[in-house]
Image (cartoon, rainbow, N blue to C red; front, side, top):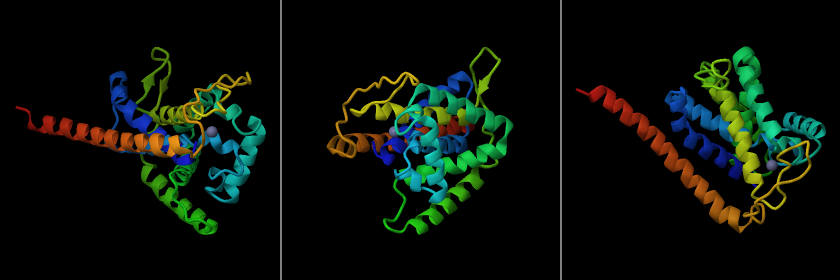
Length: 248
Ligand SMILES: [Zn+2]
């Protein structure tokens, strides 16, 4: 799947899930919902950091290239460990622990996720790599700065009967990784979902990356999904505010 397909799938999943989270005690501000969709879209590209020549590896020039080479070496190459349930759980709790106990670490991760997201949705000029790296880095730095004051570890979902609360940043990163693996499973190559078991699982309804189905069916549906859900989320917030201020 193409980068923008993954990023869109991440944003759709986040905006679709957010309304249900309120029932589990995770009531979020509009700013947190928007930040969450950016984080989730970026995280939906994370598993492809195991690919040193993909577009993700070019997001920050040599920095992401070296990083991707390292990830590929540790994970066993493209579509191995990073395309599994293990990776989803690892990233979800790893992010949550960073957001709770080591804020600067989370800010670095957030910066990287935004860089990946910007690259994933296709913000780049062909054959102008230095320029792209500078623009991408500057935009990501600005957005990270805007989000730095947010509270990422809470409100949280109660996972073990009051013993562990999973904050929204961790949940958003986990959901993004899940959506990546889910969409990759729709291609004939599949993913080793239960890694270290090497068996690949697939439901091959998208026969070719960047082919007709992905371009003319998957991408338009996901784009429409982002627009509809974004309007519904913001309109929903507006309706709640209006009711609160105009009752009785
Ligand atoms: Zn992938």
